[in-house]
Length: 157
Image (tube, rainbow, N blue to C red; front, side):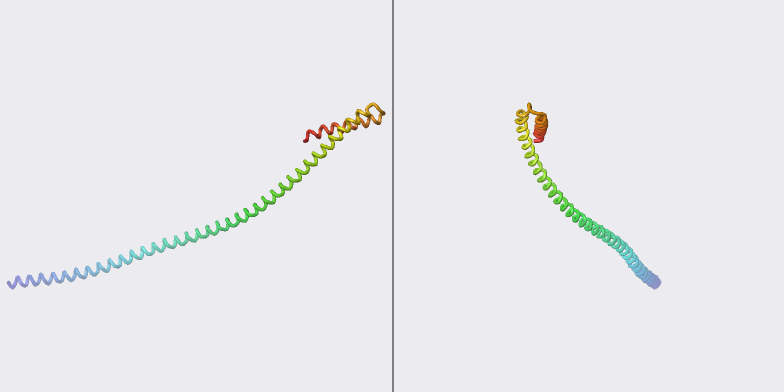
């Protein structure tokens, strides 16, 4: 019994020693686990920081592009405004020219009417003076030319 007790005590002592070694091993493993987790957290934080920095750079690039587009829009609006002013100016010029052309057409019609009247008078005078002197024949020829001009003027009406 005593041997058995001694053997049990020895076994207990070894078990306690082994238990102490296992506790020490657990402490070492827990420390390693914390270091591993800390290292992984550090790596993850560095990766996240890197991604954040990349995103900040991209945001800066996009902000620059946005500013460039806003400047382009301002230039386009200024050009549009200038083009609209030119358009209105040209439209006014066209209206003015249209008005002048209308006045010219009216005057041409009046001249054509007057030439027509002269042609009628020339016909009357040419019949009257056709048989008389050479001067009168020249006058009759001149009056015929006026009549031809009157006929041509009618084609413009």
